[in-house]
Image (cartoon, rainbow over all chains, first blue to last red):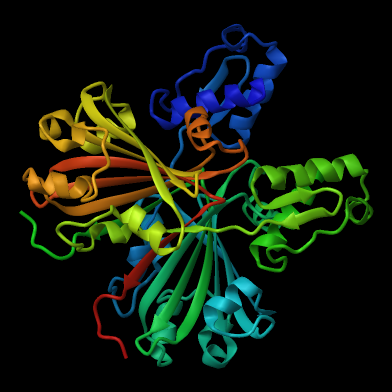
Length: 251
Length: 251
């Protein structure tokens, strides 16, 4: 591995394990150069990777500091829990307001040809028309994640889902009111680097990996009625699930 | 964004959406250079990123091809489902054998000082001694993921967990037999680039992002009894959860 990558990986490891804490100062470029037996430019290249990944910030002339990251806690299970019949805000807005921050969503609705990844999950042929409800979610004015829902057009063509307005009760409730109540969902999470469109929509540094979370919802009869692709930049999210042991009683 | 990163991001997007399928050939370096208005070296740098990420392979003199990826389906929920009292294999080995592939695990047991990330989850002070049962799991001889379990030493010091032998019934059952049956677990998933140690243990390309999955298990009384850090390279895994809607009946 080249020296600049060894330097990046070494400090990444110390930040990840908690050995270096938010706002801690890294050693100087000179000290790191000595430690690794390299020139300062190599140190700068290595630390530049961590700046791009969002792990550290350069505050000239003071040096490099571990970035204080506010991970948004992302809980897919909240989606399938009961909520008031006439909520004032959708779940995302509720969570962010409860955290004392300001949510905002940019929504656009379009008719698109289903790409193979979506078509397969919705049980339709690639290229068939689906309704895409595409959102970028902002916290305190910063783009935070992507949430693009897709619906077979026949299910939703006469509904509010076709309007690019904010729906406080959420699209899951609209689907339920249309007779397509979801009973079961599959969450599939892939880890990868972002696509050009994702980089653009989220103003990402190109070195920031993302989770691509497909949420596919099925009725009790097993019909897929929506597939949402959530794109979560790794420097801003932690995905959380809670599990209960099944089978034998605890004790 | 520099041109080489635009090229990498563009083809990454086509592979992710399924527009380019496994074994498809990418356009030639010459064609891509024309399309983006750059020199061939820039194309090579851009595609080199996708080679490092494990998305494409270069087969000289034929060109670049989309890699056929076998994602291991990684299901945290399987951990908390009942299994036979005297299984012949642990869950990982069972799954891999069922897929017609050959599993193998390298296990080492050590006493370590808990890093802050683990100490916090186990409810102990950073630096206290924990038993680390560190595993690299192999499929068909290839390192696939890391699975490092950590236990407060007082709970397990007289048990089989201290032996670096393979335990077909699994450490969760050993804990249960010791009186620490897990009742509830929290799964936390972070998306990031790998640390130097992870790159070394998994023979990773430095451009491959990973999921760091912390599984913390609690008894019915709320005592944390183990914390496992699973490191899953993004090019080899898909994480899957299944959810059932709660509250109102479906229909």
